[in-house]
Image 1 (cartoon, rainbow, N blue to C red):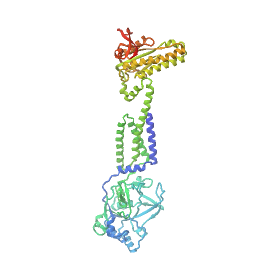
Image 2: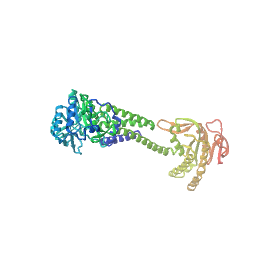
Image 3: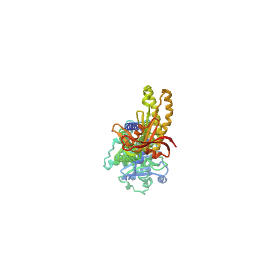
Image 4: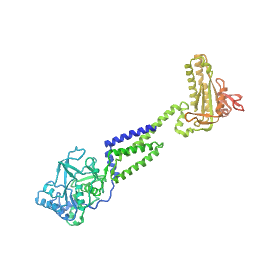
Length: 585
């Protein structure tokens, strides 16, 4: 059984490794990671957002605003902010050259403004550095004035949730870095702080995991117009990163995030989260599938040892505890920069339990059939069922002293008959008689102990309790006598000779259990009660059922007997009163 269970777990593990390689449950896995791994924490004060929100649209006017408005803002912030980032594209010059010139001059004089690009891609790009087919950039004079340029491209997953940031792509051989990374790099240079990016955190598409610090509206957000009108002084942003971007549903730039899949987060705030990751050096690496496969093998091995336990409930509790530990380990690894696949491991544990329970069930069912088939040849079907239901408690093996009734039945005249017929016919006759005795024993709840040549030994009240076992034994004997009549007629007709049963029954204490050696044992009964029953059978004449006085005292009101007096039994000093059963009342 253990080898087959191990084979089952091996197959399960291989299946889940294959599913892992194919990323079959990737969508479910990332959603589970969202729930378990992503937690809100304190947002970085160094990043502030100037929102083009409803209040600012009301104060300044309909979007898009004149470029001189942006020029005024840049001039206000230039001497204080460490970096100013516009999450807005300016691909074309406006209809007012003077406004454009004011904006260009303000950006150039500030020397700390990062502007945005936007790439267009072939949707069939799969792996490696993504190549952009087109690139939208600020119109040339404005582009030249900026201290840096970064792309704004955001790629939500299939469920619309933004979980990764595109670090870079290429356009006509040039590497185009992200808006957030360019801002973080310039801020680090300005503040004299080294900024090191962990390239190993990038996946095959040059994306890295975003560990969101806050849900929507968690970063400090100040209306754009409040800086313009002086309600918020410019020195409030000293040595800070100022991100400027849409913060209203009117200018569609919002996405779902792992921390809140109902309320969208504006793109500018997603950039704020990415910048915080970069400044903190907070990079989460998704481990290669080979390491996840190794984790699956380890989980399967542990599940195998747990599921070998006999109690399904205990196995379930242990697996649940271990699943919790696995989840805790995953979170601990996440905090240390590694992301493992959760869903495959948890599904493997759950599937292992279900398969193990099913395996044990069908194995037990098969064992029941095997025991019923084998043990059913020795005891009545109802006894087999009770043994299977009660298990070891029902059997109580190992040598138990208890009150039993023992029946011996032998075929009288069989030796003489065997001398006149062929051996094959003798076997056929013997089998018919032994089948008859066995069925009569089973019909009344007896246990077939053994066949001894042409004799049969049966036990009543063992291995399981049998009410009124003495009477049940007598009923078995009477059934044998009645059913043997037809067999006797057949033998007389075929061979001109007939045989009859001689039966002896006695009741008393005996030791019941497995008797023998470690390599060969029989379930049987030993003691003086057995010897006495055998002596009674040897004293019976053809067709006689002899019972002891012990049996008679228990059944005398229900049988018709003929008292045969007292006989001396070998091995006993005192004689035994015996009776011949002649009928049933």
